[in-house]
Image 1 (cartoon, rainbow, N blue to C red):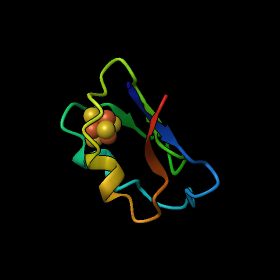
Image 2 (cartoon, rainbow, N blue to C red; image 1 turned 135 degrees about the horizontal axis):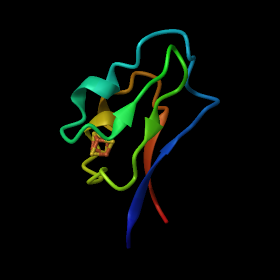
Image 3 (cartoon, protein in one colour; image 1 turned 90 degrees about the vertical axis):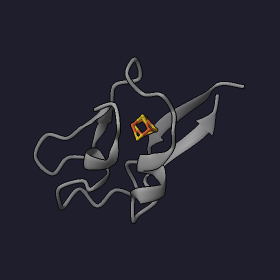
Image 4 (cartoon, rainbow, N blue to C red; image 1 turned 60 degrees about the vertical axis):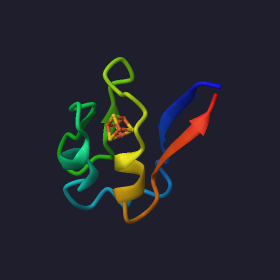
Length: 64
Ligand code: SF4
């Protein structure tokens, strides 16, 4: 089953630079200001690194 990375807005405090943006190996995460990061689903290879790194568990790989 295909997975998809979802950003849980209610868990992201949106008050700091997102640390997970830097761990993505393919540059699929981007952030404007302190907003929650956005995912480029065409780039994302669904590796789960950002999901494991996010201290607030706001990035979640979910089955579609
Ligand atoms: S799941 Fe992997 S490829 Fe996708 S945004 Fe997160 S770190 Fe990047």
